[in-house]
Length: 268
Image (cartoon, rainbow, N blue to C red; front, side, top):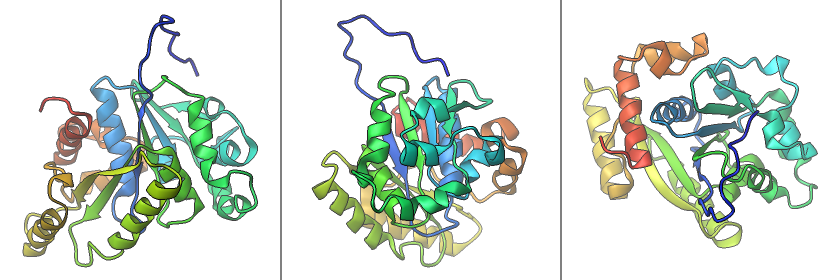
C-alpha cells in the first residue's frame, strides 16, 4: 500500500480521528454503519481506514474482501506485530482502505490474555500509520471483551448505533460504564461522540417513541441523521459493496451521506 508522501519537516498535521463503532448487542447495524459511513466519508474526499475487529469479518466481506485469501489480517497485527500497512487492502471506493478480519480473530480474545500490553496492541499498531488517514473507523465485535477494549484504548471517539426497536437502550449503560473505565484507566482522550439511530421504520409508532427516548436521554450526542430500515441496505453486503456504490440514489445511501457530513463536520 502506498502511503502519502511525507510533508515538509515543519508540518504538524494532527493524527487521524479514530472512531470505535460499538454496541455489545448483535444485529444493531454496527457493521452496516462502519462500512457505509466509511464509504460516504471517503466519497467526501477523506482518506479512510476501516479496521475490522469482528471475527465474523462482515465488514471485510461487505467491501468485497475474501477472508480466506488474506496473507495478513488483524489477527496478525494484534498477535504477531505485523505492521498494519501489511494487512491493509484498498477497497473499490477511492480513498477507502480496509484492515480485514478472518475467523482467526476469534481466538485473539483468549490469546491476548497473557500478551504484554494486551489492551494497547491496536493503539501501538495504529501509531505507525501516523498521518496516512484522516479517519479510522473500527468495527467492534458484539461484546465488551479484549478486542473492544483494544478499540477503545486506540480510539479518540466512540460512535454507538442504536436500533429503533424495543429494548434499544438495554445494555447501553454497561457500554457507557466500559467507556468510562477505559477513559479513566487507559485512554483519557476517549469520548462518546455520537449516537446514531438506525433501522428506523417511519411507519411504526414504536420507532418514533424509541427515537424520542434516545434523544431525551442523550441530547445533542444523538445525530440528526437517521438511518432508515431498507431492503437495499440489507442487500448491499452480499454484493461486496457499500450502499453508496450498490444503489447510490437509495434512501440508505442518502442517509449515510448525510451522516458522514454530520460526523465529519462538512456542510450539509
